Amino acid sequence: MLPWLDPSERWFPDPSTALDDPDGLLAAGGDLSPQRLLDAYQRGIFPWFSDDQPILWWSPNPRFALKPADIRISRSLRKTLKRGTFHVTFNQAFEAVLDGCAERDETWITADMASAYGQLHAAGWARSVEAWNGDRLVGGLYGICMGRCFFGESMFTRETDASKVAFASLATQLTRWGFEWIDCQVQTGHLGSLGATPILRSQFLHELRLHTGPAAQLSSPPAGWPAQPVIQW
Image (cartoon, rainbow, N blue to C red; front, side, top):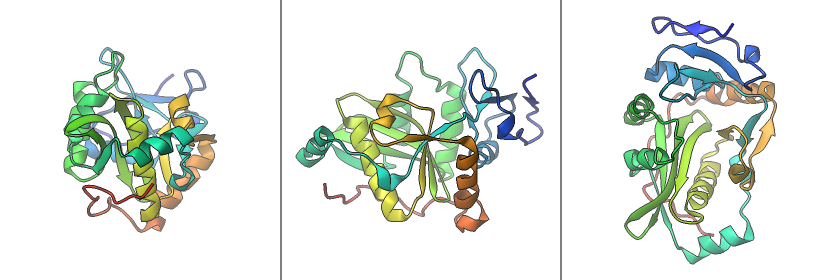
């Protein structure tokens, strides 16, 4: 039986007990308080549910992840980067990025989820990357920054390659900051084309213990992300 989390108690089952079908479903219930969300990410767990469901918590096996230094930039994407079609900013339009990610027909970003990540943004944990064409926001992504890991949550694009430019810029900047992992959660062809690969959940959890716990010597996000990263392609 799937464990039910009481909102008054902050705990999670061992991720190794997650279901195989559907892959990674671990628990239901609880709440979306900032501290519970941070506890979840540090344990390799994330929420994913729709409006007609209770809060569902997941830890899939394998996990899809990317070392920022291993970003794969295709020839066509490199041409786009060199043309300078888009310019990239960091953490300048978080709410607009969240709205962009929620535009899709089958979005899982409910009103409660948007509110929860807005709180994490206000506290400095949730960060966004924006791709602009002139003064129009045409792509971007957001996620949680913890220790030396960035937990990607969602991305969107309104013009070809805009989200890829945002992701490539993020990976390049995180490499400079010494980050070890970008968590991509579940496998997609889009992220696979950028270099993300599946790794065993046990290995992923080991990496989290190394890079988000006390050994990482980083208990909060970088003090300030640049408004516009200086990246030469």
